[in-house]
Length: 264
Figure: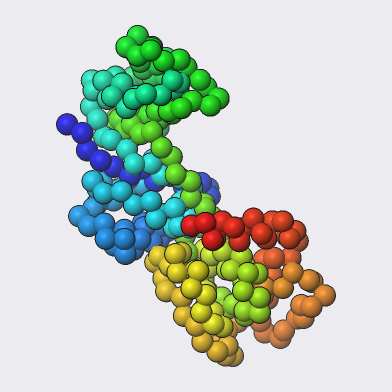
């Protein structure tokens, strides 16, 4: 019997040592908010070795906008004896393929390379198709997690970084809309939530696990984010920490991040 599962991978959270559960739990909380806001119901989550599994029959590509996620895949949870036939059924009219297996559970009797070779050999014996390790038309991913097999054909990239809400909050002074959007993106990626001097509707797509608020600046705002790109224009302020995420970035880099924000 096949079950649908979303495999969520993270990167930076994995090196947080003893604090890792705190970051994992916040990421799960933000993901649950994303799923709920995108009308995905009746799901369960579970932490596994370097992965977070979401058990659901629904897809949710909006997870790519949840900071802290490196990538995710919509996978099938299958029995070991069903691996060959399931993989074969995924190959349609493609002319080339690759098997990308990863054994996270070292108690599983076969290594990643053995799975690659055996599964690849089975497909070659049953389909008129060739192997392409560099640019395959279909990349069949296999992950062994807690002695269970998950198979998928697509990996959707996230923004990595840290879950929003794990590193406090800051206030953004908006002068230039494009620069402010890029500055916001970079601060959110570092795990801080933001209060804005005015609304930026393009940031709504990242609003998972928290809510943007727009208001006038006040004396309780101790961490200030600026959208300046010129160090000369930045002045020190007493009793305040000034963050300047755009300093050191080229115009090309700023435009690249701005393009990512607009493409989501």
